[in-house]
Length: 408
Image (cartoon, rainbow, N blue to C red; front, side, top):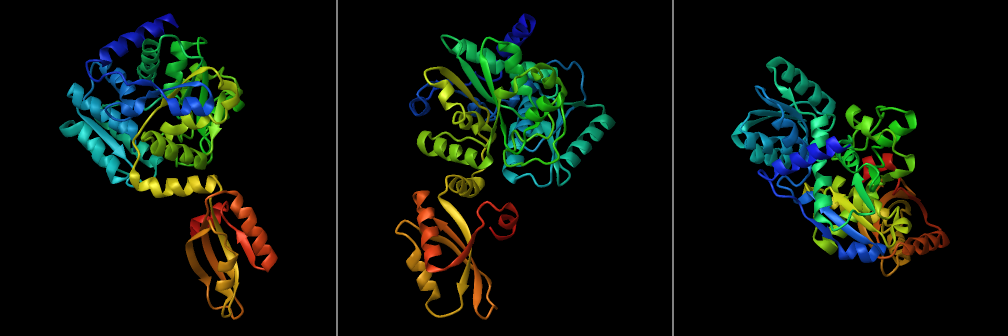
């Protein structure tokens, strides 16, 4: 452990030539909300708005000879490698899925400048990764893995080095996100058992928890990619060796829709822009609220590469999680006055945000998709009672994922 600590400290010192340490700030809003001393390690304020440039720097500086660096990524890892290619003055090729948003492509190109080439290959990441690895083998390049690399893990440990230097005493707990496990393994390797660690995965990508339960890394059959910075189907082999004795109770899963409420809260209250993976640690405070009262907690906000085109979807998910928005399929009688009768059932705080006939040809009844927003979740209970009392037939489809894909 001491050897790792020393090497991580040296790596951190060397990084200062490239970029300054990120702030570790006490957050008054969260501290009051959870009755604890809450600090944020602001990796969203790094030059590439995530911690990924740390591992890229450390791994790339240790490669003595490479014709070029190659990676496959649709986001933060690509930007981190591109930034370091420009710093070291070495060529790099970044493979991205064809479906990568233009904003991420443009940012990667800006960070790498003339030193990188971007290739858009494959509709899904697995195809992109395969093409990247095959290309790397053909040209004799160095493939830079996003997390399954001991030098990358050592680089990510610089987050822990900075936390230790920035605080007057070690925190009681650090809450951090887990995707492939590079950051988690780095923090764990540096602090050992000195600080309690709480690991957070997205509900739709619990590869770490699955590995603990199975006794080794397993590949998830399905992954929800909404939390794209941490939705990984299989935890890395190198991180697993560090993390394999983690108690199952130290691993939490954050629901994707609840994460959206945290993103909006941090944006509206604090003016802090977090991507879904960057909000994981803050969101998980809700699950450990009773345990952390009166303690000092550091949450690692791991990234802020948020595409604001996603904001309407984030708001929608947050409202649905909070019970403030629902979608109903209403069986509406095909006669004059029926719609007026329905409108009379709505409460003073209920607002129709969508109204669409799904079936207009029926002689007696028509199916209508209705989206309703309200100001208090309890308003829907009262609305449903009034609908039942007046004889309207309806179905709440808010949580029906299959119908939502087709209708919403």
